[in-house]
Image (cartoon, rainbow, N blue to C red; front, side, top):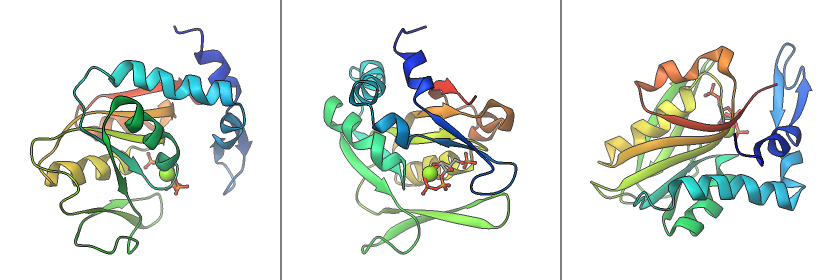
Length: 176
Ligand code: PRP
Ligand code: MG
């Protein structure tokens, strides 16, 4: 494994019982406080994706907005925000997805991505996989090809990968 990974793992703060009892919250804000480790995190993704002819990096609100843009800039791709409902002013594709209780929704501007573009989806974490599944659906509805999803953290026990219809997910660390 890459020698930068253990430091990344150690900078993720695990907060028990937040935001609800029983949840072990994976807090990436502590990773952002260490510029060397934050840079290593971005570099690991950039090294993986720089030669893959990716034209669009799509970041999932909110925490995908932290990791997506620096990756997009470094690989020379555009950045497209996938937003929570009713935030985007233009015509949108809308994709609902199930949460543990209830549902949520992501939206993407029509016209932000052209048919045939090669896309990378970025978020901080994959848990049940519902969020990434919705994100991929938005890009595919716009005619883009999603090469892969990239996250800093995976919670393997929640088996989110099984929800992604075989689409690869690249993660740096497993939750502790
Ligand atoms: C968290 C996390 C991922 C998503 C993963 O976001 O940042 O986006 O949950 O969960 P899943 O794999 O079960 O779908 P959240 O919706 O809590 O909001 P935030 O990023 O806006 O804080
Ligand atoms: Mg999120």
